[in-house]
Length: 330
Ligand code: CP
Image (cartoon, protein in one colour):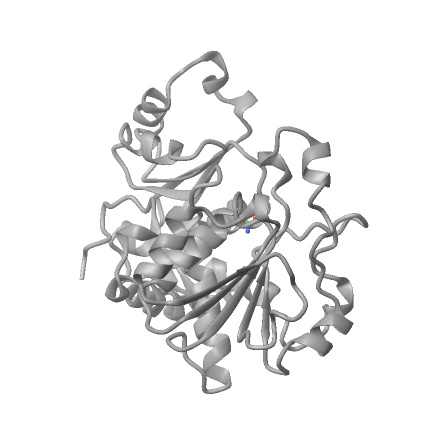
């Protein structure tokens, strides 16, 4: 199948279950390369333009690392100030120019729909690494891949599962994208826990309801977790608030620690967080005292991100069937 070759990846709405399964199949084949058990130079000579106009650790570095592991080279642009966007250049012109220097572009930008606007000027595939509070499709794919793997270990499936999403559901783009991916499955129960002011946007709620899923909306954490197969925590997205003081009103409202987990969750509830978690005293939505708990999947999520991003590069550049052909000595 070649439906990905030459295509932008801008939104999870582009994907159906077959496409998701295709990405997951390629991601699974990436594991030996990510673990350095095998090497491939399938993207030798190719260049990734890695454009991050907003802070990132996992997404930016794993996009770059994924491209390197496939044999390609990475050109980084970090921060708006180092780009002529700060001189008033349009996203269209920036894309038009940079797509001559790259075979594929990964991009994060603080404005919703900016990556889509950028893609209109690009002559190479553009992958959305997060556009404001709108979407984070590669995070949602790695989250879904993680959920499928974690549940499968206990004989559970995505269809029929219960997910509790907690925190800043208004500005947290990962929960928007993940919810929409989950709308492709059957009989998922959602418990959405947030302050009323930071509730999941109506357009996402409508998608969940239209998919026929059950949904509970609450501003109370304890007492609402006992059915959850997946507990997905998020931080307060302070960069989307008008001021620190405004964000501080919501910090620390929902905290998970070992004691609360043991008292209120099932023994097999998987704990997820897209990271970064806010470890400052006043926030601390996911306490370090769960760090060695076997159900804490947060670092497995980050590891899976490498596989998903390798798969997306291989698919958009049309080399997914050639990994083995270009294997080289480890
Ligand atoms: N999950 C995520 O997007 O992390 P970064 O902001 O560090 O890329």
